Amino acid sequence: MKRNLGKSNIKVSAIGLGCFPLGGLFYHKGEPWSHGHVDEKVGIEAIKRGLDLGINLFDTSDVYGCGKSEKLLGKAIKDRREEVIIATKFSSVWDMNSGDPKIPCQSTGEKNITPEYIKKACQESLERLQTDYIDIYQLHWSSMEVEKAPDVREVLEELVNEGLIRTFGWSTDSIERAKAFADSKDCSSMQFSINFTRENRPMLELLDEYNLGGLIRTPLGMGILLGKYNEKSKAAKDHYLQRVDFSSEGYAKTFKAVDKVKELLTNDGRSLAQAALGYILAKHERIIPIPGFKNVKQVEDNAKAMELGPLSNKLVEQIDEIFSELRMDMSKAY
Image (tube, rainbow, N blue to C red; front, side, top):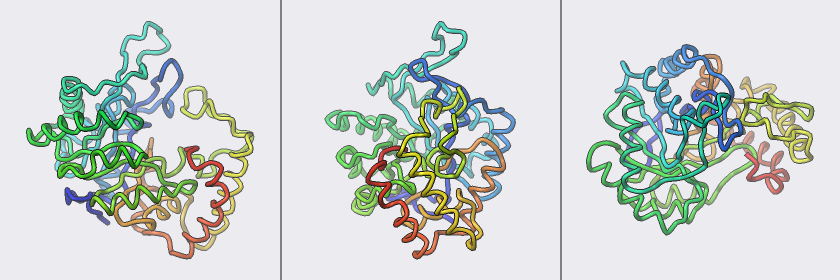
């Protein structure tokens, strides 16, 4: 099951895989910014299993694990590079020597988009990924001032001309920012959020207007939409969600809505993850959800969503109805 990536006509699997968890434990301004520890061997096995199941799109970033995610992906695919569509990102600055032995590396929160830095970041990503080209290179600064976009875009177009990247995009939910890249002949995708709690219709309309593909992050709400948590839950200390108060009113509404979706699926034969992915597949033919993963079991569950296909229109309407009130309260929660 393949979809076109916008004007690039790159063929990507209808489900991709997000490699943020594979970066393992790292920090952002001194706070945990990860899904905890990931065994390298397990991560490599999971990537290879994804390839065997027909998934060819893997989304990462240079900042995930301070380069560790890219390195792991590079090791896993080095003998199968021609099968893979690599999407990675740039702009975040990180520190490999924070001075604190408990924090071996961390994102500093700073951004760098000078031409020199972008070209350097691209070259370093190529080395970590063990490849001589990147398929989709994405700006990883969702709130960058739109006035800076033309200069960044010019550098990315140079990288396309040099053969170092095939196409580029921007990880942002901002229509104004997306439009600043969208009409470039070398821009083929945007990365933004859609899940049960967020429809993001303006971005879907933009994809049609500019002939773009959409890489959909947080399709599973970082596990919150899978019934993994409840009002009494507390994420592990090394987990991205350790700062979340699951007992709040908003999360209580979310958990109740997820339970209702689970009831709908009793006769459908899908897991909650497969339903969440099938829901996104049904929303538009241009979009590709990229759920995170840490092991083979999760990859197999996600890949099964391609076989099961989009949800029926009836199920989509029922889910939209269940989450309609919640969207007004928490449309930007995940």
